[in-house]
Image 1 (cartoon, one colour):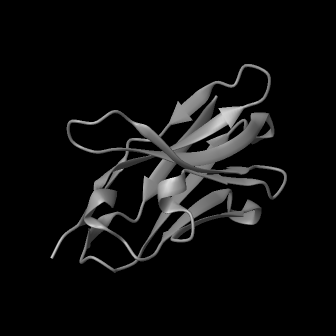
Image 2: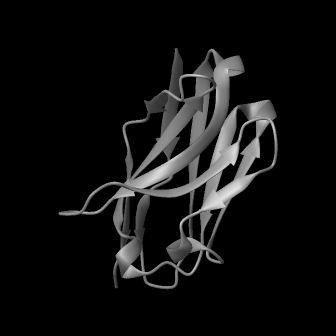
Image 3: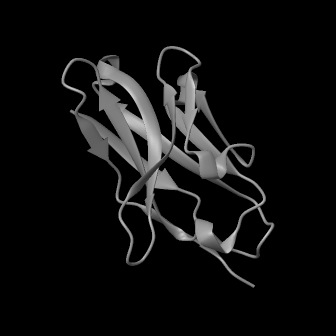
Length: 118
């Protein structure tokens, strides 16, 4: 079992910045990747970014490339999503996940709300 807990959401104006955090606990040796999805009202959940747990490979959806950066602090078992130049269309509930080796099972957090509005 792996548990993940997110924090760091909030309300920011367009062009603003936020940093989301996600801390993992449990059977961390099973983790292959951690990352973020988001779901806006009336839309399907979409992939945002991911990072390899043991390496430095990162992955982004095209709409956030150049604006968001995912990073990892293994000493703190924490992954961060730095979000810059935020746009109203980034408004969504952001979910952190941990993905395990072999089964590719996803363990999800409870979500943290990001609202971009003036």
